[in-house]
Length: 271
Image (cartoon, rainbow, N blue to C red; front, side, top):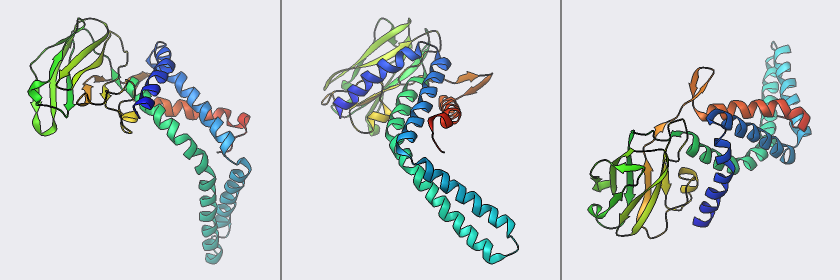
């Protein structure tokens, strides 16, 4: 699992980081458009367009029968039952491509969320870094700052949750690393400082199935380090579209759906 996590973190960084350089909105629109094309390709190769088209026509025909013969309860009830059967067939034909798309799109959403949902710290800004540890006494864990990010407070310990937290302050722009040092060794956490709207991955986690989705952007914490998670409390980032502040997933869904609907006839896909 650790190897898979590390491989996905490296490959996603190589693919998404150049896109991020285009700007928060432009990069997201490009990724969303490619996501719509990928969804069309999956539907093209895993769905049955003729069967989907026939099921949709049956639904429309039986709904029309309900409207035409609304005074004949027997016909109406039979038509309604036929509508439900046709809808079941339609959903069944659509289920296969959706199941094919689910794993890759779940991973894609996790990596996009890690890069687009949080804004990097700005110079002079403060945030909280918290770590959940499972080795040694909490008082033995220390946080070492760097030239770009300083540790701004003594630790706050919550024994019931095995959690230690510090306040940190951004000093200068760049990608910096803080080191959590304790009985299990040394674990680094990347901290991004930028004056603009750059994104930043908030969490680093020990390897596991959950870490592939909850902390996908950085390589997993090494086994035996005694640290489960390290998280920086970055400020949330809201994208501005035509004067409206919105979450990145709204932009992704709107753009990818628009691209898929625009190109579906040319791709020979039925929805």
